Image 1 (tube, rainbow, N blue to C red):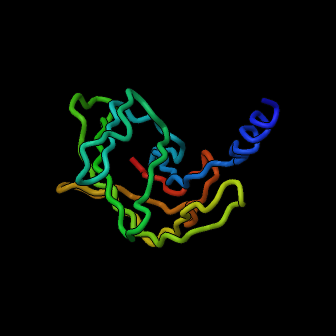
Image 2 (cartoon, rainbow, N blue to C red):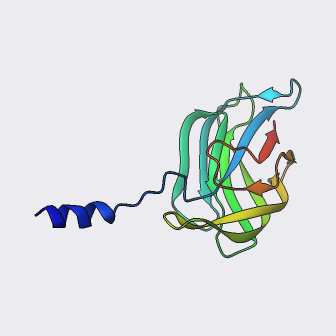
Length: 149
């Protein structure tokens, strides 16, 4: 019995770092240059029915980039202005270069990304997107893009 418990304990994964690199996106007030909370936020991957975010209010979001592709698009909608009652839809397009990074023997590899360009648009307007950091690595809470509203 003791040997069985020792074998089971040895099989535990000792990885204590995030094993997925997520793109951090913050929403900014373009006039005051400070974080802003968007209301009625919904985000889906383009061509995907799965909802990644459906929140009443958020200042930042963390999104998965496609592992084996160089372009990832998200369909997102939110209240653009405080007086709006109907969310405005946008497409967030991120061009990036994925590359594997060995974390450790326990954690294995994580797919990191290097951002080339990012745009946020709909048929009527484009929002200003600042690439704050080009490296999407597995640091929780790290913001790479800032979208000015």
